[in-house]
Image (cartoon, rainbow, N blue to C red):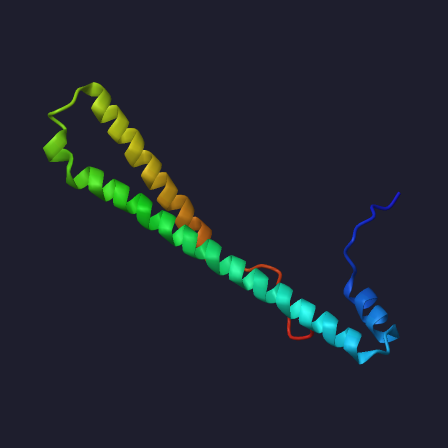
Length: 114
């Protein structure tokens, strides 16, 4: 049994648009497609901005812990060092994942024909 989806293939879309004779409907479909494309680009931009903020925040945590170690390391006990190490590892991990998120990738996108 074939799986039913709500996605149409490109030939099916072109066939359905070919059957439509009203230019207002075609314009509405085109406008809706542009709206969806702009929303996708805006969402991608926002996510990229958040990833950059997380990378900067993680790097700032690690930098702060390393640069101020001399001032606070003798004030605490063993737990202080353990908590600081966990914070540094967490900050470094957040920065690594955020940078990986912002890496350039090839993905399927609309071409000139669409």
